[in-house]
Image 1 (cartoon, rainbow, N blue to C red):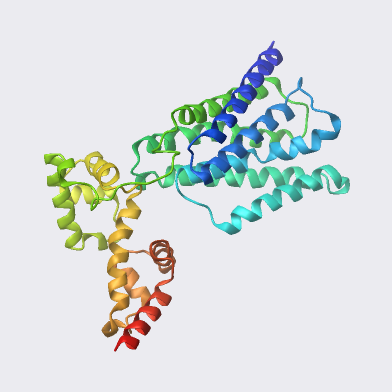
Image 2: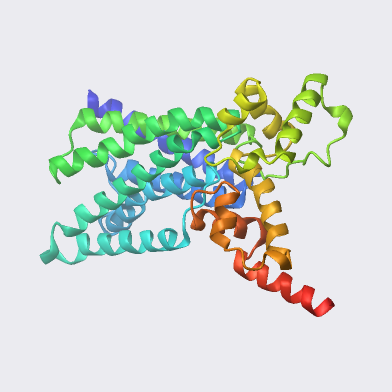
Length: 347
């Protein structure tokens, strides 16, 4: 009974995944998210087939179906990171697939190393899921997109229950015969994840998936702001002009308390009206603008970059360097050298 129900759920999930894959290819979804979500749908189908006790691919294809299946946590992790606009480091992005492929090869074709490949795949996959949970929950306070803030709460629950739960169970149980109730639960959770992706894709939710092309406050007509938004915007601008953005560890809760307004109103203003998708991006806009002015001033050439970073509210030099490079495309040191060199040539 359980096996029949499991097979039915798997077939429904496979059909839904293939349908969504066709919609994804034709939809107006951001390129990086399209790649990650496409990989997730393909690997999910491979996992549903590979782990089934009823659906069996041809023997010659089974190792390659298994290869696609073991990438399910990787594509889930990458999809989540890109959905939350937190692109992972390139080194991890490229090294992880190499480790997974090498582990798969060892598990299938180097018998004397058994079971190193099996455990390596599971440890790497669990590390990816743990990192996704860290990003989803740990950086939720910085997110200004309301729909995405909700996803940060329940998407990790699904991912942890399905991918994390199955991986832990397999590590404990080893490569024993599949346990039907666990198989069914896993199939249901994969179907739930597929339906989540479908809800976003069928609407091509521009806040989550479509190309970002926000309008800045300078481009938005003043008449488009309501009276209350105009008052709040003026209070916010006054606080920024006074340098409140330099406050160390400043979060949107602290800024809302300083302005004496509800946090949700301030979040809506910064996101929907001023065009920022993360609070850190809003802060960096003001902090980096001042940093550029300081680095361009000849009279402050001896001021250490670390001191500038601390004065602007950053908690470390690497954090400041990443933010500066993201805004300007170069490091603070190179920016200072170029600006002062150009100034000397003009004089």
